[in-house]
Length: 123
Image (cartoon, rainbow, N blue to C red):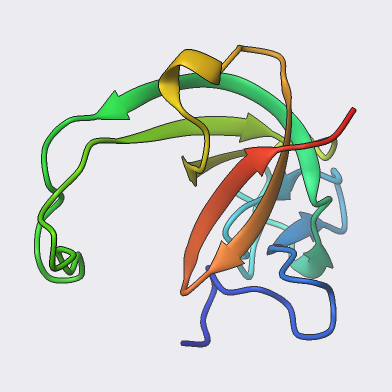
């Protein structure tokens, strides 16, 4: 699937966003114009590592479609906002157990089938 939420080819699954040519605000997903000032925005590959800003546990199945329940049935999962160095907060499904999630922990974010996914970063 190719689109504004997909990874940039050749960047190891990193997300692409945009940066305003005028005021330098970065956004995710990428957009043609700056949400702050309206100037044109340029595509940018976002940093692959940030910090966990906040998180929660999704305890009910998302709407289908696009969600496809696994054969074993729905299992609760962790989701959170990861703040990237560009100042963008990305909502991601976290491959982190709730008991291991800590606000401020380093998290690597990649695109996986059009959905940002995060996992604990080494360090």
